[in-house]
Image 1 (cartoon, rainbow, N blue to C red):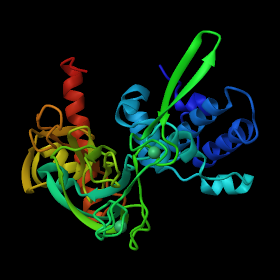
Image 2 (cartoon, rainbow, N blue to C red):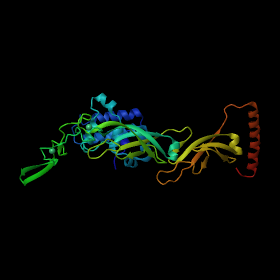
Image 3 (spheres, rainbow, N blue to C red):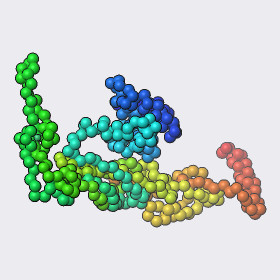
Image 4 (cartoon, protein in one colour):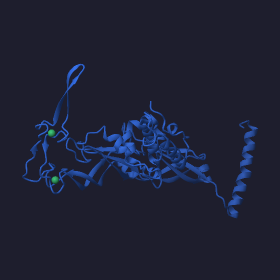
Length: 363
Ligand SMILES: [Zn+2]
Ligand SMILES: [Zn+2]
């Protein structure tokens, strides 16, 4: 199991934003590969940077605290964690290049694969309850419209690479103590494509790509949770081999009345002392209109009234959560003369009853 992000940075679970930043800064100075040549520096630096990326982002940190390390890692890849964080500010102070993370990952990905893109969509709790469809505007590299992605001027054919005879691969024979060994590598001249562009497209200068604004429709399933990511396959940057994906993080906007706890909704309702003691009917907002609930006589402060099935549908098993109404008994701070009289009278009466009960041994 991977290390806990808090212990990686050597901070407590209650660390403030500043404490997180300063802990990371200290460790980054120690482990940045520009400063530290040891073998473990790069891995160590990735580890602290991932921890920082997650803990410095409020919504990610909340998700991490709620679900724990393993569940969090199951949802977010390390690369995604890096991409969403902004290290520029901290690195600028040290004079480090901010592009370091690109370098970490470029070796593992094929340059002909289109890059994945990231975005965030904001949705309301009402939309979470019903599921929704959202439009998302963004920019991505698409196939150049002029050359259709070939990178070559219209009507000009590509030339077969002379270095590899169009194979895209070159073979090298080496004499070694174990005999002749042949190795096959990607042709350095054509980068494995087998063809050379002799007349680059004027629009894209031979890259075959063009930055375009796009609007896509995203279906958001009911019950989606804060920080979950929707993956839109092939909606990232276009690539020669394969297109990247677009990852959209869901941000649920705060609600006027409700807070969400898993699939239940929570709301506080103020009731008076008399309502608590005598019972009463009160109106409670739900996600679809008001509802009247009946409070039992003798309701205690912070008693919970449960409205079955008025919560959020679970994204996992489609079970519906409840609406939990916490009954806050409001004790008035200012009383009229008459109110004082009534309450004093009430108290006298209450003392009598308490006395009766004592006689009968109830207390
Ligand atoms: Zn072009
Ligand atoms: Zn070649």
